[in-house]
Length: 78
Image 1 (cartoon, rainbow, N blue to C red):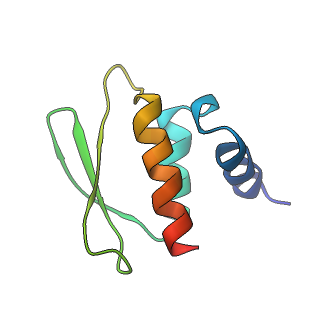
Image 2 (image 1 turned 90 degrees about the vertical axis):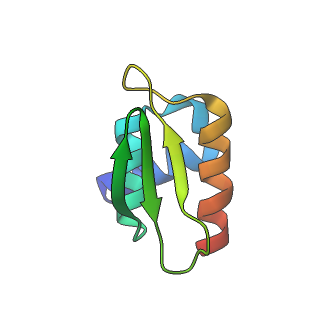
């Protein structure tokens, strides 16, 4: 099992335990493309999704609500 696979497994079990930096690596691993940053909001795009994923990041961390939303979004493309 590779390092990214361990991070994905950790994130899917408990999204609140991951930092934003790990989440960004997971998103890129699943084919998301970081398309823009405007202030504290970071936007990701994926070919299989109609809407962009927007994550507000403050002090290098995002809120648990957004982590759960990211988990649900990943479930749609897996």
